[in-house]
Amino acid sequence: MSTTTDIEILPGRVGNLSPEQQHALDEFKDLIKAEGIFVPERHDDHYVLRFLRARKFHIVNTHKMFVDCENWRKELQVDGALHDFVFEEGDAVRKCYPRYYHNIDKAGRPIYIEHIGAIDIKTLFKSTTEDRMTKQHVLSYEKLIKDRMPACSKLAGRHIEQGCTILDLKGVSIRQFANAFGFIKRTSAIAQNYYPEMMGKMYVINAPMMFTSVWGMIKPLLDEVTVKKIVILGSNYKDEMLKDIDPANLPKTLGGTCECPGGCETGEPGPWKDPRYMNEK
Image (cartoon, one colour):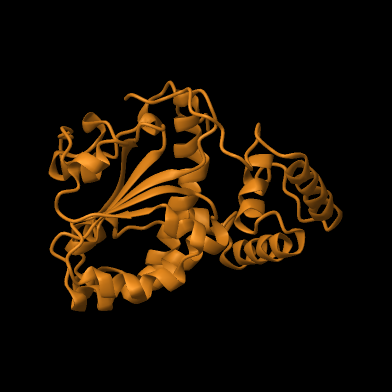
C-alpha cells in the first residue's frame, strides 16, 4: 500500500484555519456544550469542522444541521441498539448489489466501489428490505469513521477524513436506474445531511451516453461543493483514474492489477485489515 504523506492541509481543516474560522469553531463548540449536546468521544474538532464547512462556517445554519443530525442519530439509535443489528443477508445482497471498500488512493483515502450497472433490484428486495439496507448503510458509515479512517490516518501519518468513490455504470440501463433511484436518493440524503464533507473525490466510470439525462436528475440532489468533486468518464477512464490511484490498489476488473483471493469485492483489503494500523477495541 502506497500513499502520499506530504499533502498540503486544505483550508478549513485542523492546522489550516483562518482567525475567523477558528473563532467560529470555538463559538460553535461553546454553543453545543452549553446546550448539553456535545459528546467529547465523537465531537472532536475534525468532526465539528466538517459540519461548519458544509454550512460555510455560518453558525446558525451549522447549528440546525448539527442538531438535526443528533436527533436523527437518537431516532435511529445509531449509538445504541443499531450496533446490535446483524445484516445476515449480506452475502446474498452483495451478489445483486456489489459494493465494497478496496484499499486506498494516492492521497491515503479509502476507496469505495459500487457497481451500479450490476444492481438487480428485484432480486435485491427479495433478500432484504430498503429499511434494512439503510441500516446497513449507516453502520458502514460508522465503521468508516471509527475503523477505516483511523487506520488510513495511521498509515498516512496525518488525519484522513474523506474517501474516494468509484461508481461503475457498466451495463446500466434507464429502467435499472429508475428502479434504484429511490434508494440512491435516500442514501445520498443520509450522506449529505448526517455525514457531510466525507467525499474527497468521485469517479463515475463507464458512463453511457444516456447518463446525461440521469445526471440531470441526480445533480439537484447534491450541493455545489459535492458536484465539483465528481468526475464523469466513459469507458476510457483508466488513465484519468490512475492519476489518483495506484494500479496495485485497484481491482483488475477496473483497470488495476489487484486480484484478491476469493474476489476483491469480498476481501476488502486496506490498512483497516493490517494489525499495525487497526483501531484497538
